[in-house]
Image (cartoon, rainbow over all chains, first blue to last red; front, side, top):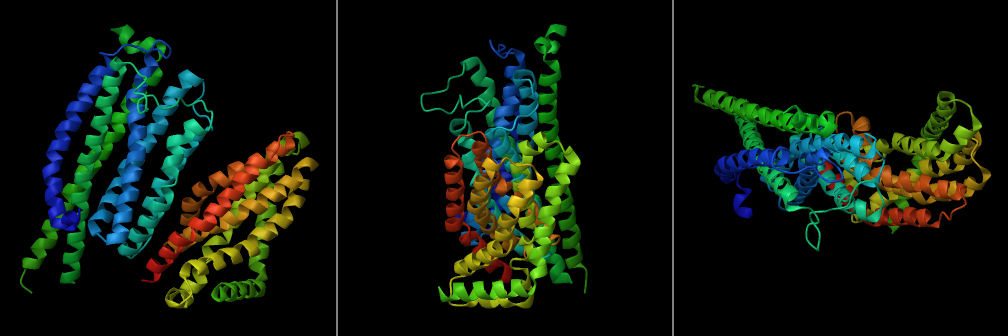
Length: 237
Length: 54
Length: 221
């Protein structure tokens, strides 16, 4: 890991990973759309609305995955003072916020026909809404300082504090009886979901993950470029 | 075909969910690509400045 | 432990000299509560139904009001730098600061809460639980607030930013605080909710001084 603490090496890594992530993301997202919209049957209970699952569940997974990654990168950044870890956390935040937003909105679009309401104040929905605000707070705090290093460190501490919310989201459907259905893919006794639905779900999840890595590479490269620009300007000033 | 786009009467929920998901992700991708291009341009500009004689 | 009591005494003395700060918070609490009957109408049944929630929300917002000043004056005049290099652990200083904040804002809010219950036509059965829930819950607000206050030191628009960072983290306290009163009003035991509130405060007591102290250290670095 320490090998990639060097920004130049990290950019080289990002450049190498980026085309692969792009290819995998585009291929799996198209395949996921094909299976999700055409080659899978409607659910016997939920009818055609079950297709919303293929965009909703992976988005929710990514919302938590991105936050965990952001908090982990922030911890690395604070402990070993790796500038690259700060860059990774900062680049992850808007992507995670986008996935959280999508999880909330697609969940709402799924909830209206199934539960008869756009929104319920149950534990899962509330904790994901809080996750969205944590992303917003992270980005706002990051940008609130004239001294960039200050903003980075403060936001990193906030990301770590906010990580208490991630297990709450994960277990909210087990701890509280809510409208939201419990996990049906990641379970100890194997997935309780039919293979014809599991295929598009897994494809979309892989696609979202690859998409995240792809965009992350782009944002990390842009961020490191801009810090080089600032350094050059300082030297010339 | 119309049957398919009707989504069993749930067209108003299924299609927006997919459209919004891919719309938001595409916007994020385009914004990130643009900021990378802009940063590369800024780097070129700043790099060019260092080569000018003092 | 000496450092703790010395800092606490100093902060309380400062707060006593500027008593208008605490009174402003109290006035805000009363005003925010009074707005609700004016907004939703004076119907006693509706007010009784939403009373506990209104008191809690107003208390959260009022506690937030004085939070961004928890470390601000020490940061501005350089006291904070001395605290960071002082032999007493900075985590203990954070506890003293949070304790002082609770004594100067949390306690006045608890004292004023029965009056707000009166305004909101709260059922007499709910008063005891409301006070107990506030007493158990408000210390965690000051502790969580200490983390936020330390993080926004020196930030632009620190006050507004603080509410964005801290209000989401207050949600569990709010849920169980209101839940306790609602349980008491429906003749169910409020003990589970009160236990959770106590647990939240104990967890905050054990966990928040570390990130808050880390935030203070990096602020003066």
